[in-house]
Image (cartoon, rainbow, N blue to C red; front, top):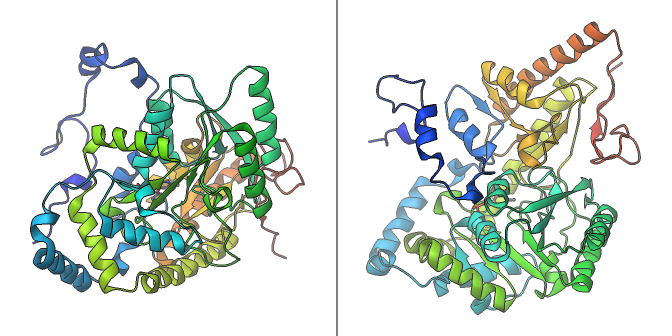
Length: 466
Ligand SMILES: Cc1ncc(COP(=O)(O)O)c(C=O)c1O
């Protein structure tokens, strides 16, 4: 029998039969005095809120970051569960060591080797997804007001963690080669003048979420050198490195640095399943020990059952073959989305052309607000992530993130067509109201036209047909 869908639906309006009423202002007031100060700046990840809305089957969601788990054979899932039951039932149902099971660490060593990283299993901590690594690193390193450097835009899911630990986040502009190291150096020099030092630099160097761009080798080397010179830690978040559709692989920051200043985050979510909630970290030993203690307080250990499943999967299957299937599928979907954007977005819009990962980042003219646009889009039953979710300072208002991995080519085309129609209407309305010719997007950091030399992200600028 299928599971009830209740957990995936959104709260309805107050009083709707069968649904719990939402909190009233009075409820909120009653509890407000009890919250810790650090929760004051807390806001829910826009992405998580959106996930609830977009779980409605009638909505074409280009908002999630969902891998296509329907590609994993249900028969294989069943047989792996049976293997776990037959070979490790009691252990799979038991607590495990905080650092993770040795069998799973052996799998992680294999996955990291695929990106040319050597790691001692004793230097690994298995976590509840990569998300827990972000939380543990913030928990371990940050006092209120500590500076964290991040990319602009950054992973929307990291925003609640950074806010929860009251980080003072400085976002560095990015372009097609990832974080702009010249801008990073300027920010670091500015911090020197204030007598401050960042606690860590958070980056997603390969096939970034949400931007889709990849840090060049030269910038990777410079970033690692800066971290070493200044003795600043880097948190390298790498869920997508193996989801590469074209181009040469880039060395990870961890392999360039050797692990002295890099805290590395990996995950099984995008190469196997996010439902398992299993990721990992490796970090300089004193930091790893602290992360381990933090994890003991958070959840004692990651799901032992899930870990046994991973071990059984790696023992029975060629994980690289499944990865190959995902890469081929997502490459086709990326191409479908790029083609649909070309066809349906007006020439005033620009977007990235990712060589891997799950996302395309688009920029619309400054006079369009993608948060407002999302409300329109939801009425047309299509969703995306508005750009503000990827900034902590209100920027990103005319940008948006589109996901292509979790949607069929047909839906990608239809979803982009609907978005294109809404954007086209808004652009036309602006022209009518102002009597001005529509213009291409303007970079927020430099003021240059997005097609110009100083642009933030060199977008693919669509040429007018004919
Ligand atoms: C950049 C980045 N970091 C971390 C995560 C968290 O992944 P998980 O906790 O599923 O491993 C995600 C998920 O989308 C992500 O895109």
